Image (cartoon, rainbow, N blue to C red; front, side, top):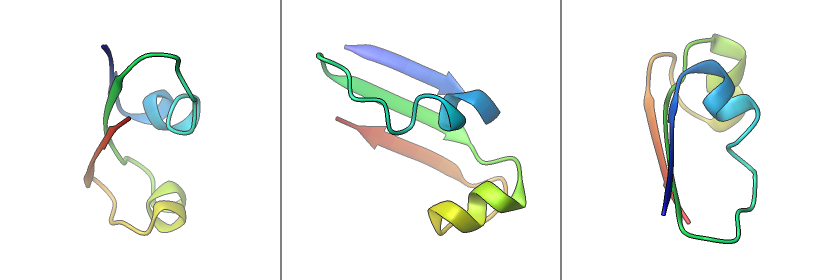
Length: 50
């Protein structure tokens, strides 16, 4: 299991990355452009388990 957490780069570089093991991606959306792109609100928390 790989856990990736953060704010900006946790989403920009790793959100769509496909890993060969289980992963948990946690991030806070800190800009309005990215929030709109992901269909959320600024400062929302994103959790993605793959």
